[in-house]
Amino acid sequence: MYAVIETGGKQYRVELGTELEVELLDAQPGTSITLDRVLLVADGDTASIGRPIVENATVAAEVVRQARGEKVIAFKYRPKARRRVKKGHRQELTILRISDILVDGRSAAASAAKVTEDRKTERQRLEEAARRQAEADAALAAKLAKAAAPATATEEPPAPATKVRRPRAAKAVEAGAEPEAPTAEAPEAETPDAETPKKPAPRRARTKKEA
Image 1 (tube, rainbow, N blue to C red):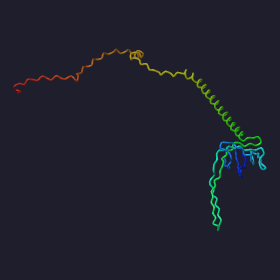
Image 2: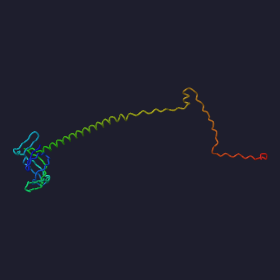
Image 3: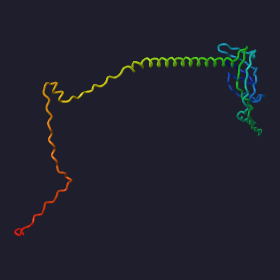
Image 4: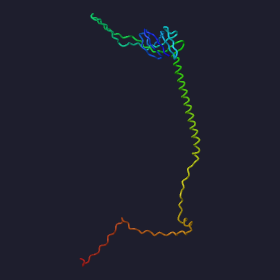
């Protein structure tokens, strides 16, 4: 929904939440004012055109702040008369924020709030459905894990086969041969210890012939 309003000799097209600069109004920042010069109100495919204003239509606005516009230079010149006039001007402005548009008992703010609530409800409904689906998936996964747990616990891996070593005598008896008599092993010869020092040979006495 939008409307066309008139203030300060100018016309403005406004919607809910629009901020606009109008000529100075006698209102303090933070207060709310009502603009009753509404020339047109359109809501979807329907429109109400005023002659010159729309009956039972008002626009509520909030005063944001007071401001001043940009400086405008006015220069007047008259040739051959030595007349030159230069003036500067800054327009005093009021910043408004549109808070509501009312026409025939309908409110733009109420409609916007209802749409927002419907969207929020739809989002909450989708989140609730997603949460229920996640809980169902978790319950199914836990059930499948519980059903598969006993089967894996009862199955034991087969023990590895071990080879039993039997003595040679038992193998010979099974084959039908007489077992060999144990032979006595010869004692190992003692070897001289390399670390034991050898005794020096006795010196032979020298004879006269050799001398």
